[in-house]
Image 1 (tube, rainbow, N blue to C red):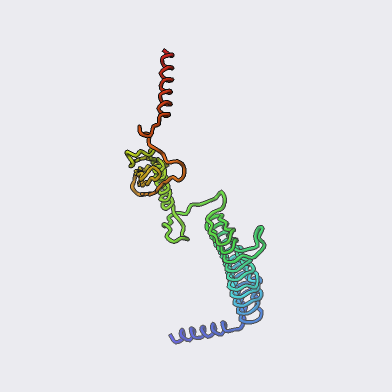
Image 2 (image 1 turned 90 degrees about the horizontal axis):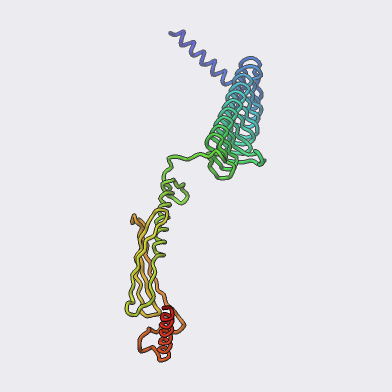
Length: 328
């Protein structure tokens, strides 16, 4: 028991001394340079700079500090606090806080970049994240040779390079600033299970849109019903009139009732109400109509008919009678 404890203590001391070395290389052709670097593996595994770690075949760190390269042919070239893991993962540039995980994943020129997945790439800007096979987030693409920041691409061949843009899903493209894309032209997607929007900047779901469509139909039917109300000409013996109408719009109906009242021949008041068939929408109106200028109308009474009028009427009656007699 005492011998076993001694072995454990000795092993611990050796490990502590080994880890405290300013730099070490373990395995065939492993190389280290400057201070506090660690190279573990073979075939040109190397670490240069300060506080760097290169693990596995061909893992390489050139310059910078506190970088980690893990995997076959992984590379970290310049920069600090960077991590490259898996076959062919590559980080290039003087940025910090970058991560490339996956076969041929690449992070190029920027800080706080993340590329995760086979062939995923993030670069030419800051705070870009690409997750998924061949996903890309950043700038310097197509007809935009400028850097782009704060982009996120998630999905197979998803691309986000508009600036503060997000692309979600297979082959989705976000190429405009401050946008979220779930597809591309001719490859659109639906967004399901969206709650009804509440604030002015919230998205609207189909239930809210259909509700608005129904409201428009009800309002349209009410407007048509209201337009069907109309008064008759002024009658001094009956100054009050009633009117009713029914209207329909896109299959939705409404009824309207109106009242018209003449206080004198040149002034008329009117009031009307309308309601949709389902009673969800209601409407009311009040108005007044008056006439100005021109001669005042005179009712046709025996006292207002002059002799010349009588002669004209009498002549007209004779002509009509003569025509009828001749026709016989």
